[in-house]
Amino acid sequence: LGFTWYEDAPTAVYLTVGVDGIQNIMDVTFNVDGLVIKGNKNSSFTDYGNISTRRFYVSMRDFILLSKGMDVRMKVSSIDYYTVSTFGSLNSIAVINRKFKPFIEQVIKHKALNNNIAYNQ
Image (cartoon, rainbow, N blue to C red):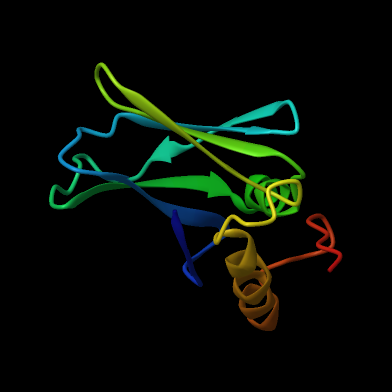
């Protein structure tokens, strides 16, 4: 899972979702402490290679929820296959956990977070 923010689209965070091997990625869904967040497709097709990837986006508000979740389950669905990954404070060894804080700090520097979307470090 990778993420990107663009100044031209300040209320969204773009997610690059990947799986090993050649798989047609159809959807990504997150279960954040019992709250379900569905990623919106941003690319028409999956990019194939040793790792297949597809781009999605979520609102900044949903991204903040992902970053602060205690137990986050990410389900990446293909046509007839799915994978589940976990991260969040209860899954402390997940590498993705370390990427949220510096990313959000950079977004804050660009004043993309307003009073309606609070992020308390």
